[in-house]
Length: 254
Image 1 (spheres, rainbow, N blue to C red):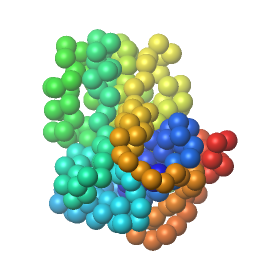
Image 2: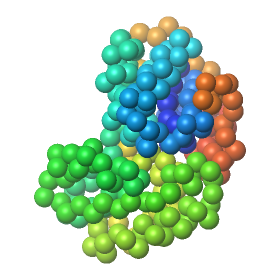
Image 3: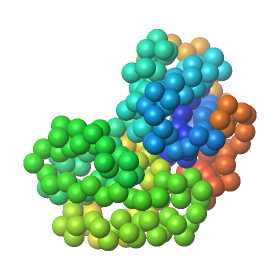
Image 4: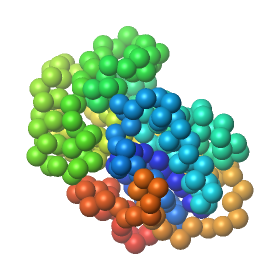
């Protein structure tokens, strides 16, 4: 069983690591686009074409399921990718605003500056936040610092976001799929009572449900493949600064 995960940078690592833990025999293929990262500032039509092109290639190379563990890709290209792939399941990503707001009166959404200012996040808040108060916290440069593996810049960005997070916040939602890679640092910057919500584990669980619905005649071997902007490659060195990246290089079942 082969799962393709598509993201411009390292945002696919948290979901991939959950998949490896939950079902070690899956063959995972990460499609990264370092030549064009990040996708957020790109024109929507460019991103749509890029994601669909990559997804079609992934299926041609054996993917049984395609995952978009990227908010930008999901917002812009989820419907187009599903239309292009027909019967192949495509799983998107949505920040966990709904479960956070269901159980808490005050939440903060940590996201990129572009997402924080987007109509997409505003719609999420309107649709799912209910009566909870919501603070939108732009984490300037955090996703880029994670892609570079720049630990000093990561720490500075987290400290800045924490300073701007209201003291009465009860929960934070990670609105960028990169951020779970530094979840421990984020939590250490906040009051211990604050709960964190991210979508990576839920996306992994949904991926497995969809896999189980498909009649697949072959088993996986627990392999990891990486494509970098259309070229065969290896996991970027910066990924190994994070536990999720290191976990993907461990032998299947370990």
